[in-house]
Image 1 (cartoon, one colour):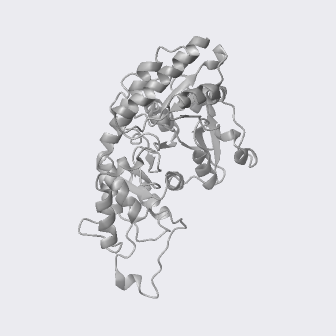
Image 2 (cartoon, rainbow, N blue to C red; image 1 turned 90 degrees about the vertical axis):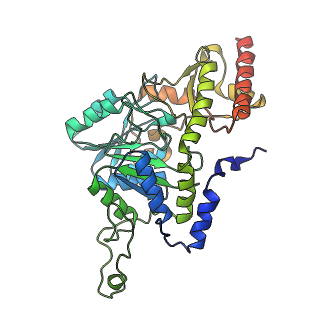
Length: 392
């Protein structure tokens, strides 16, 4: 069995020890959450960063900061994870599903425009598989209508567009996940960024149980012991959730963030290797990367055209695994096709391109640690392509 601990050879153990030795108190350099927020904001050239316990919580925090409530509508792509829809539901609003582009697999700006109504209060573009949406077009639409834009970058660290803008930093709010499969991880966790002080304050307070002492820059609640321990002191001025990230998770995430460029580069190397093999294959149509854009390849996404040759999706996957491949993941079911959305009157969507793509998508792993592991995947893919080419 492969050693899966190779990703945690930086300062993870040191920072964990620091947290334990401090008794979960802040050191001279601040708490781990504070250090993580500062470094993440600096890395992404944003004024504010706010940690949370998951990338789903961050979306809920963002929507609440944008005053999304019952009766409002939020446009999301139908081809995305259900958690995007969950966060809209948590806010009391209704998700409206936009179709995706056939070549990039990302939300279609033209369909966003068609789906906007008087109830639309936010757009949530999702940078799927490490590939960045066309934020220039999305922001033009949003700014023209006075609509908030919340970028879900859970699968997209340090990808950029043809203007050099980093995914998650173009809209009003950016959201990332530190879940175990992401580019950098603390097993669970998430983070938000914004350049808007008021949005930052609202997000931090909402995720920090509504303590009134929380500010845009700090989650500290015991600013003055005299006030805080006064029987007459009122603590909460906002109804909120406990979405705070633990210091232990923040310690691991900080150590991972220190090596983020290395982790992204490893995934890009694997992605480019798949690209080299599949770009001329009649069995696949790879996800398009727009001119001037960089893809951080959380996974390598491609359309499987096997139906044209009588090859079943599962048969290709099984053969790939038999040759030593890690496995192939399917795209998530479209959000509006999930039973929980259908049963709660949130399952009415018309996105024909996404409907077709979802059944064809194959997602290849990119989290290999070195050239040897990358070569194993490429050899398995070559053997699988050769096997089925002989049959076709």
